[in-house]
Amino acid sequence: MDFKNKNVVITGASTGIGFATAKAFIEKEANVLITSRSQENLQKASDKINSANLKTVVSDTANLEGIALLEKAVAESGDKIDVLFLNAGIAVFTSIEEVTEEDFDAQFNTNVKGMFFTLQKLMPHLNDGASVVFTSSTVATAANSGTSIYSATKGAVNKIAQIAANELAARKIRVNIVSPGPIRTEGLEKVVTTDEGKDYLASATALQRLGHPDEIAKTVLFLASDDASFITGTELLVDGGYTTYARK
Ligand SMILES: NC(=O)c1ccc[n+]([C@@H]2O[C@H](COP(=O)([O-])OP(=O)(O)OC[C@H]3O[C@@H](n4cnc5c(N)ncnc54)[C@H](OP(=O)(O)O)[C@@H]3O)[C@@H](O)[C@H]2O)c1
Image (cartoon, rainbow, N blue to C red; front, side, top):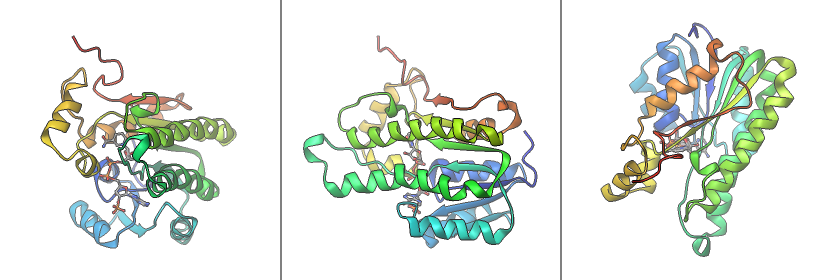
């Protein structure tokens, strides 16, 4: 996979899956621009990756002003984008009875509105033949109790990505979806706080373990690469068998 001097933009990459993917692209000598809501978190990520090819921009994807800051940074760079990884996302797990308007809006604004308008605003900056990858989740097709809003956001993401694959095909831009199962990230640690909770999630996979962010990063690099040249509009589950696992 050759990403040397390719321009990659990743939303939500101060930690977790986005961070691992930024690191993987940097190791392939790509130029990578990452976002998050926090300058401090971006600085920590930048210190860890420690590469002149990594740039950061504070951009809250949950509102159009934040997305405009990202667009401005891309426009000012003068470079067209070869890979756009729409990854920033949050989860709040609670029953329908207990969902608040604030939880509802925060998840839809970040996970759906954020990905949609980032794609829309960056579309003119994509090279023809570029690759776009959305982070969805196995929950987009499952119906686990306590995940109503989060799952609904990821269902919406899948549909937006599929339609984007059709609308962008004329420019030879491929659009795909990576749907992780349970992955040990800072984000997962925030919503599944106990060892029992994490053990339970691991036991719900065929492979009996949580995934590593690097395992999602490798999939994103594959989808973004020429090795995936005939793959568009596809959802790739990277879930240790979570979706199909039948407990004995
Ligand atoms: N981990 C899993 O098990 C799992 C499974 C399925 C799907 N996913 C999906 O994978 C993606 C990444 O999750 P993760 O587990 O890697 O979580 P994470 O470690 O919490 O990473 C999320 C990243 O998004 C950033 N972010 C959050 N809200 C943002 C906003 N409004 N604007 C810009 N950046 C924002 C965070 O940075 P700041 O806090 O610095 O802003 C952080 O860099 C999400 O879309 C999530 O839904 C995760």
